[in-house]
Length: 150
Image 1 (cartoon, helix red, strand yellow):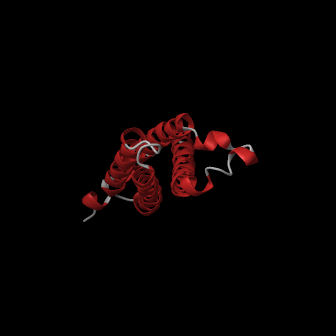
Image 2 (tube, rainbow, N blue to C red; image 1 turned 120 degrees about the vertical axis):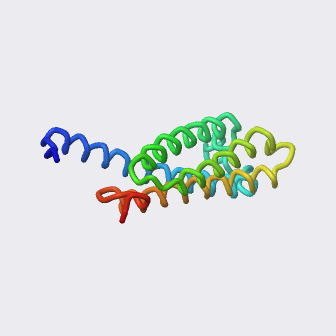
């Protein structure tokens, strides 16, 4: 059995820290997205008065969903490679599907309640997936994935 070099240990530690931060940012952003989408129909008239009218714009929402989707997939695929538990990845896929369906098929102008529900549920699913990925990485990151344990 080869002993890992100090350089490879430093790279591994930096990789772990980056993945940990990405999951925390992803979970926070996804939760804020869910809150934003659930509350938007109620505060839509107040946003321009506060100088936050861009938060109600569909371009902002769609750009945020695209960013959140890329962050989630990148972070969760990296986590899956480490812990080999697919549940977080599947929850994220459901959440991303809900987000994209709500943002593109049920535009808030045509079906505001369906839009808000789909996007809020999708954001919650993606946040849950990030939290689960953090937990799995913590549990199995330094040991063995569950399918390789004796």
